[in-house]
Image (tube, rainbow, N blue to C red; front, side, top):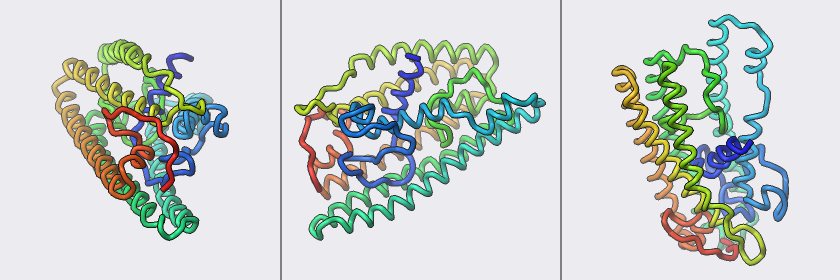
Length: 326
């Protein structure tokens, strides 16, 4: 269980903000608890130890890993012909994408409704600040969603060009993380959008095992995070861990992707270059959206409260602070 847990923690802490805007949750100083979060109140369980965001993300990941779905029911209880197996895999991918789109749309709608409800609770002098913060968060999520929306058709075209849209699912591929959506991992794209030979698969598996070991060693020093005077883990410290994990994850992803590029055929290299270029554009737009969001929130409530909400900017040391109100 150790390796899956490490991967789950990496995914949970390193996942970039995706989907519709979420207003700051009470006492969270940031994004609200994800659906499927683990139980436990403040000071208890995973939520008390790691904070609502990580507990919710880990809960969603473990749910995704353990839940039996209608597609596995077809694969594991029926003797399907190859054509039917491929059809089930295609429907599985479509379902995951449509489900994520539906969840994002619902989250956007509900976020707007609950921003209005929160505003009703605030005195008039605090409303402009909260409105400015909520608007900045909404604009960030809209920009990120737009960037991913632009990325998806490019990757879909690559998948079709490579014939991966008609290929059966590779059961050897690790399936950690939440289903659906458009991945910005160049290694994931190799596994999901290309039909690799056995030698290419083995090379990719070996490279990922080696890089995962190096990544795990680099991350060992990040745990456990410091605690504040009340015995709780400092949320800013965990945000910095998440930032560090994202950086390490991206570095590892780039290293494995570059090494694998030399093992691709000319036709694969051309499509892979197209996919990687599109992913780089999406990542740049995501970073620009996050930077713009932080700037607007700093203008609205000041740098200290922006750091409490978003975590300190990359490279800035985390300084434990008492909770601040808007």
